[in-house]
Length: 323
Image (tube, rainbow, N blue to C red; front, side, top):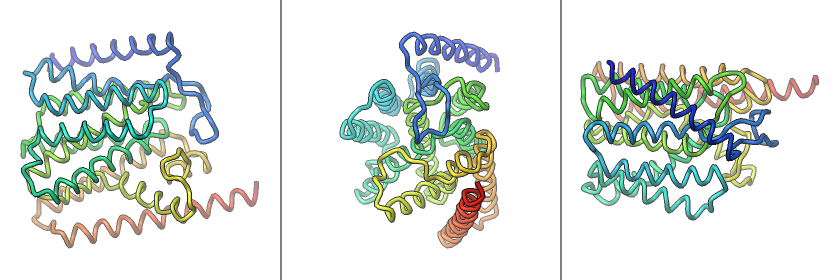
């Protein structure tokens, strides 16, 4: 326990040190018409996530070097993108390289090529979806915390990942939350935070799936996945560029249009995902999980999301008529 306390102190001081550097070099996020915030804020505080993984790597025996190398690629390119926009081609190449290192680490290339291609599509898609969802205070740390705590719970009885890494990542998320999950955030995760956290969560998810041979665990990412896919479909119907910043996610409607507090919206997303995780674990524990149950559960969640979205959009229209 002492080592985790010491790591907590180190991470706090590292993040505070980054704030001074970011302030000196003007690494800030200026609000625009697509933003969900209205104040100039330090960008890139999520750099604490890859730093935490690197500290774990250095302290706990230099394990998983290929995955850490992939994480490093993600962190460097994403941080450069936070400083000055990096071209789409370079970012995609970086993602491909980083994910390839991850797949080498978990020996995923031993699977048939069809599985490998699908894994590339879903992993890179997940990383970008997670990045798109990082739009309001608290949503990235709260959602990450639910995922990491779920992985830690499963890992206790079914070891599939280094326990120390999961615990340290939870600590890093809690430290970041203190500075981000508030009415006026002191820092945003930035691409360096959201992209690397997505990479780390993908690493844990792939490890769990390979350990168990069960794809149904993807339900642990259901809230972000459903919101992202449905929002993309809506935007394609409106002939919008899906790679451009926007305010079309459900959480953006709640925070920007209905003026719900950011931390409240983030909490709703995180708690909803936690409930889904608990139900998923319960289904597995009672031997009730199957592809049919998985598909039915996913379909039900999608319907509930669509109903919630339609209700919110209706309330927005009423608000505009009476304003």
